[in-house]
Image (cartoon, rainbow, N blue to C red; front, side, top):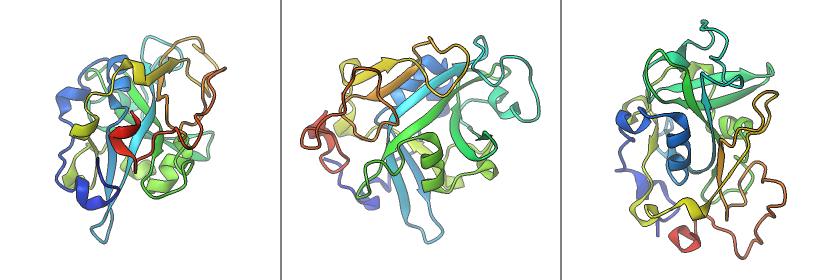
Length: 218
C-alpha cells in the first residue's frame, strides 16, 4: 500500500517522454492510477492520483487544433510530455499533457484526481484540479519533470496491474462537437470522478477506492 504521505513518492521519477509519444487515446487510459506531483515552495510535495482523463486529437472537431494552429494552441502541436494549460470559458484553467508527435495536435485532459487526506471531491473536475494545484497559464508548455517542480509520475508498483476491467470507457463531456467519441476513461471504484456515465452509480463509500486504501481497492 502506498501511504498517503509525500515521503512515500519522493523518489518516483517522471514518466519518460516516450510514454507520451503515442496517440492520446492510448495514453489516456494508461494515465489512470498515475500521480500528478507538484513541489511546493517549502519543498513539500502536493500530489494526487489521476482517476479520470479525456483524449483529444487533431482529426476530430472537439480538439483545439482541429481548425487551425494559433498562438493560443501552439503548445498542443509541440513535443509530447509538455503541459498544455488553457482557460476555459474565460474563467477556469484546464491542465492537459501533450501526446503523440510534434506538429500534430494531440493531448490528454486531466479531468479528476483523488487527493490523500482531503475531501473526495476536492479535485473532481478540470477546474477544481487546476485550482487545488495552483496551475494556470504560467505552466503552459512546461515539460513534465521534477526539475521544473511539476510532473506526472508512474503508477506505484502496487497499482501497476490496474487493467481495463477497472476502468469505465465512455463519451467525453463539456464539449459541443464529437460528443459521441468514447474517449473518456475513469476509475470505476473512485468517488472522485467528475461525472459518471449514465446508469453508472457512484460506489458506496464503504466499497469505494481511496488513496488511503491503496491497491486493496482495485
